[in-house]
Image (cartoon, rainbow, N blue to C red; front, top):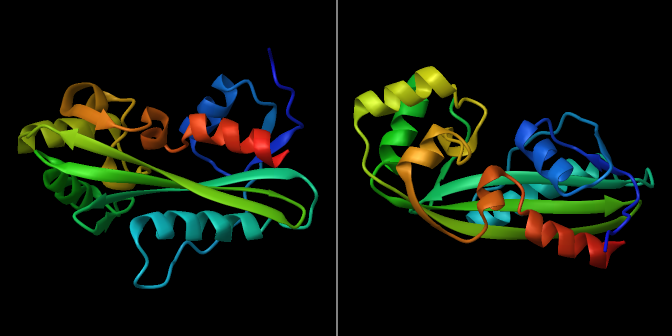
Length: 188
């Protein structure tokens, strides 16, 4: 059985999110609007992901189209590891992730007109210990500067360094597709 969803706007420049929606069989186009991604102090990682996702969605409320926005947060012992600002920052983040367990939260918001629905997913990721040389190899060859936590689960880091995940794989990629599909069915 195939589900025919109406056309969707994906408000994300992430190639991974675009690939995942394509694999879901959804008819979508990408539209971007500039949004300040700051958030208030005191929010949990899940609350931050949803807060930013909802900020992105508010830029689209009222135009009658179904819009999907998302934000992914990597958290290690309560510390938020965002996108690295430069090579040194990426090295610092990856050293922290080496040999440790962290959490990935993706907040997702679906909006149509004034109807807004948000949810999040959480995945635990365990990384093996890696050397500084391996970290440098990864940064040199995979340029993870557009990724929360400085890594992509779908590339070398995920294939070689990630030992185990508990939860949604696609959530770590940036969009929990299993949950999104079910939430879209309820939303439409």
